[in-house]
Length: 332
Image (tube, rainbow, N blue to C red; front, side, top):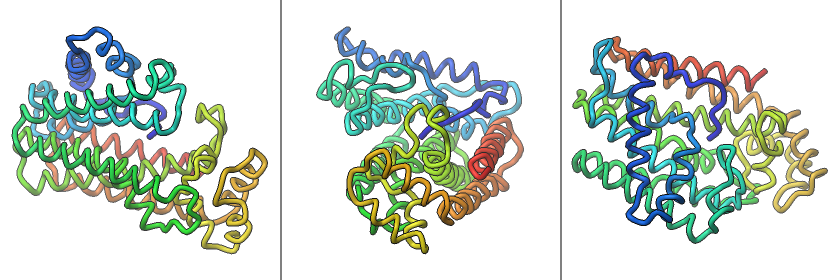
């Protein structure tokens, strides 16, 4: 998931300090008794990132805080666990994608090879599980289930590679697993460690899920409408990989479908890719995808309405506002 622009959670006064605590624990968790393994596992930790998932975990936990209060150690531990899951999944994703760059640095698989990248990803997932176990059975079970959902989502996507019959429902199931599940879990873990009431836990979980669904749809739209300079990779990368996202699926169902279908279903040369992108851009696929993203973003915002005002709620509202801005930018 590409996260552009500033991080809206920076607006929450405690967030920068508490995210520094997460960084310290990430570095410690990536360390092994073997310096060689530590170097590999620390590679993407040191490369940085927006830390959206730990930010959501801290913000969800901060719905029980007053202004000026710092996150609890349990919240920082939970935030670190979800980021370790995310990092571990990136190690595996880069192997599958044969990526050579990640976060402006050489990918782990490009530098150390696929086998070491897979094992290092497994190590980070194991560290995440250790931290989750320290927070109790409920958090440990939730994180384990989320790792399973990430795998299911990725397999569903791979299952339908180059499949022009991929349905909207199959697409939504895949992104619910590969993207939305970890954002939902991040918010839920934050609510669990601060022992929020069940209705507030449910609301925060719904926020994370809906946010993740909207963000992935927007991300998939940007892959088709942004420039290569904006993306840092060729426009239409998903098409080249045989990943037919929502705008493409919807375009295939319109009058443009026959021409588009004739191009898809296998590897694309540059000219065919560009022609396919033009067809999708000229169809209802882009505006209809944006409409669905707006709906998910609105649902995310409305999920917070039952929560009392707090630093955490203000942070998540800022994130929801930022997401809506991204939706409109994609629509422009």
